[in-house]
Length: 56
Image (cartoon, rainbow, N blue to C red; front, top):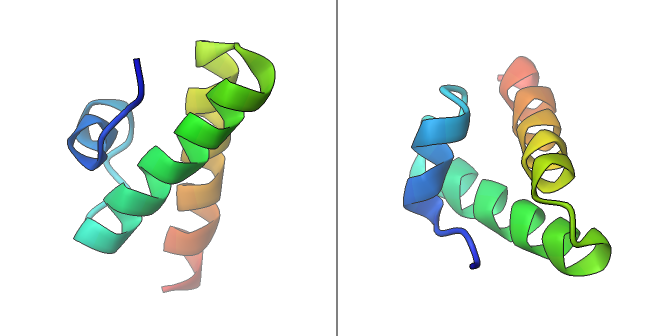
């Protein structure tokens, strides 16, 4: 099941804007498609958002 931007709120508090939520869903879905591992997909998406949140 692909994730939506709304799912980001359950997995990371750092996705505070709509753009970050959409990016989280995009990264998570691409990783899931590539690896088939939901846990890894969530971790990768969280890592991307955390790096971007540090910059602001």
